[in-house]
Image (cartoon, rainbow, N blue to C red; front, side):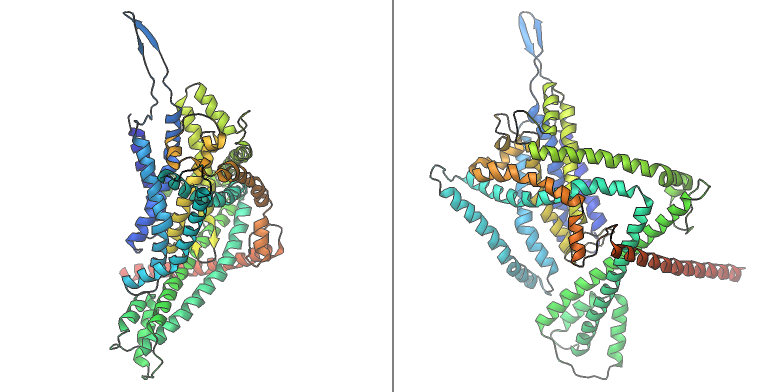
Length: 584
């Protein structure tokens, strides 16, 4: 089994990253460099999380002596764990993975973000725009690094070697990541168990879906109006720039990004125009217009797809409510053509679906919510006590040390895997959920734009290293925090000794994670949602009258869409009947 576990994890994690990219990105339409950069950043971050438990287990591995007497000689037998990785592989692996991810997040992905969003018409123009936009960005990081360098140089007892310079850079990156990590973790530790508990109630889900539908209706109308305004500008430019003009290629490039119905309308408008001369745009104007077209078309497509998904969810939840009150143990679909796949015909039949939706789902979700709540409580307790080593108060450190005494490598690996996986789910799920206006928003069903995909890759690469160091601190495997003299993991050896900067290793890294307790209380009482609600960004709050109004509005939207769908289905049925009669 030498190295087999590492190979299996490498393949499985790659398939996971590829699946997520296929779900959120568009593999056929988006630029190959955008997809490759996002896939590589996601893959490397997930790989760090899945390989770290093997590193911890390998560090805990000790040679267990069994002395066998044979001809006045003793033989020492060493037991190896099933997932044993040969010496020398992990240090090289961590070095390649870590520095590649850091190169992506601090240099390449920010540049590619600006390149993808640029409205320039040539590669040189896109590169120029990206360099200008990132000049301040890179300058800020350089200033922070120089400040830390000056701090270390001010202490004559420290000699600035290349290794220590690397440590300063790693410390600066991890400090930035830890600051954001605690904020996301505090939200996820409460919101994930609560969301599963609340999702066990179909009434809650249906009311929240109505609320989302009302908000999405407003966004949909806004996106349509914005696209119409942009298309008017394009039509005006299309009329003013003639086919023999030097800027005509730029105009044709813009028109190729427009929806087909607007292209046809522009063609008819040009044919019917009387040749009125309009002011000619400059190339800078066309670059701005190109950027607006890309953004407007992307936003319009996102709202259309999300609107369709919300309608399907609302219709399904209304069907669940009808099936719960029905005496027949058979799930009733309002649309007979809703499920025609072989899975729904042979496996997930209407009877099985009824038992899941109406009987087992509520109990399963509540049981899962309780288990997640216990894990959250364990994380919060350990985050507030992991710096105490005598006695050991961190629950994760206690579990790992108990398994270490019994030389139970599988138990060590499972405890580490479950612990770090839960931490990652809390942090990463928050990254997938948050929305920063229309600049950053991960939309499933292949609707996420290039900027958001690359921004998520940047966040993952910046959050994963401090998350792993925080996890090693929870299990007392980081000597810079636990101040214990023990063998370090290969991952920690790559990070370097944080004791070069005492005010960070003995202060910020220890006490700042305790802030997660306050953030958990703030999330539990929905303080952030209430503040956003007061600022005009409507959030779903059960005891708010505005939420009730939006729920009622969403219910009316669903009723209207149901009637539209019913009319469409009736029309199709009549056409099929006419075709059958005409054939006969």
